Image 1 (cartoon, rainbow, N blue to C red):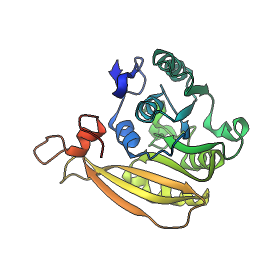
Image 2 (image 1 turned 90 degrees about the horizontal axis):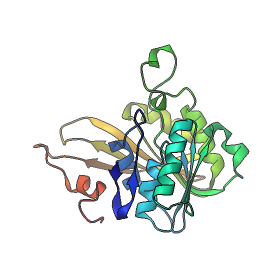
Image 3 (image 1 turned 180 degrees about the vertical axis):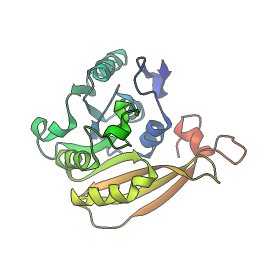
Image 4 (image 1 turned 30 degrees about the vertical axis):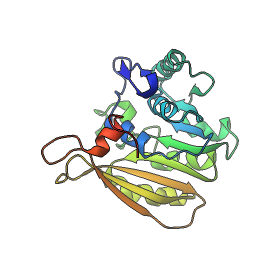
Length: 233
């Protein structure tokens, strides 16, 4: 059992993708408007939804998850935290978003998507981390359909995919507005990138960078904030 802020808890069944740095840094990066309607694409056990509901009392989160076992775990997490009025999980392929929701139904989208290409070379990678059913093009197409004009899509990914992500997002009508580079230590390479993409926005990119630990391995102030060991700024 993982214990989250404000008394919330997250149970992840054996074999499912664990609570990771990816989800923690993404939930910290997300900026939600008041009364946000959030769509979590590839929502797994409901990790991002729980983290956002724990942080923002006015938001409501709908998760779309293809794997039934993860979807059932998300439903159990929703019930345990008494979040039925604010959070739901739908067992579906995110490629069917246009069949399930009216265009512009959500003010925000979030995703911790697969990082690695599918195909024979990727078969040793866990299914949740392969792009077999979720290519960047499919992901951005779903987000662009679901978002209202001016709505934001927040995602985490690998740095070597950054140029591809920005190009594919632009093709779907999502403009990169904010980029955060994540390093584990000051002298280590960038390990993750966080992107905020806006539907229908003009070009203009804000650049940020954070380091999770100091050169001696001690937790940085931003790491403590991300893990709720220090007050948010």
